[in-house]
Amino acid sequence: MRRARPVHFAGTAAVTVVVPCYNYGRFLPAVVHSVLAQERVAARVIIVDDASPDGSADVARSLAAADPRITLVCHERNQGHIATYNDGLGRVETEFVALVSADDLLAPGALGRATDLMTAHPGVGMVYGMPLEFDDASGAPDAPAFDRKGSWTVWSGREWLQWACWRGRCFILSPEVVMRTEAMRQVGPYNAELPHSGDLEYWIRTAARWDVGRINGPAQAYYRVHGNNMHLTSFDTMQVDLKHRLDAFDVLASGELAADLPGAARLHRMARRGVSRESLLLAERNLDAGGAVAASEALLAVAGSADPSAAATLRGRALRYRLARSRRHAAPARLQSLIEGYRRQVDRVRWTAWRKAGIS
Image (tube, rainbow, N blue to C red; front, side, top):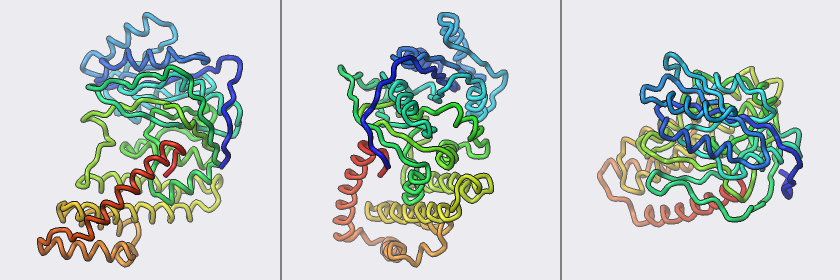
């Protein structure tokens, strides 16, 4: 890992932002403005409407008619979000590219900061940063009145992957990523068989071949939180997310990465153990909070599918003890409440580390 001070380059980097849209026409003007208002880059937009029945295509047509930097692609029939991503990305001709959902926004200066980093470090294939969440009630966060320069972090792809595999998770939400188009072409299209974890699998494939950079300090994107977000989870549904993570990490066991990533099999085992540990931890926390036994049993099953030795580990044995208590309808012990308080403190530390360093 290398830390560096940001460098601003003269000239304007050419960046295309692909905006997939399905029934989000009401959000299109804002996201397009957040792209075209970017400074120090020559930005273009490709809107791909996936046969939205809500009139999104009409909104997109009006935007495209008013600005030649906007290209519109309309699907005659709905093809799903993965095919929509790939259709838009396949049309990119600029040196750099980003994929931003129609309901999200780019932060001011995000594209210039990302392209500066990739210009300074030709081995970096993708750059991400800190996304800020917002909702319709609060609106997007105000842009800072000054340019926070922050810092850069550059990892070798393997080093970044080791962190992701050890934790068994993805450190990226998605709208904050900017890629080198050459890297995107080499990595290939999104995997249509992974509609719920395609982003994570894509970042894994990218890091297997390219270095990874991060903008530390200023926000790079604004991520809209609402009822349709696939990222929203609870203890009852977290098992589904964890299963999708396992599916994404399975690319490490495929022949596709064997030549580019020596030791991929070891990273795959590490990732499965990481997912298993998190499954056990979430199952414990659910019970410590007085949650349903069924949810923790489902998480234990996920842990076992990821790592057959999960139940025999110290955390697995602690979970089985909690399950036995809960099945007798015993309330969480005082110690369990104290442990959960400690875990919340750890959560805050990790959240702070993620905001500052991009990994946690």
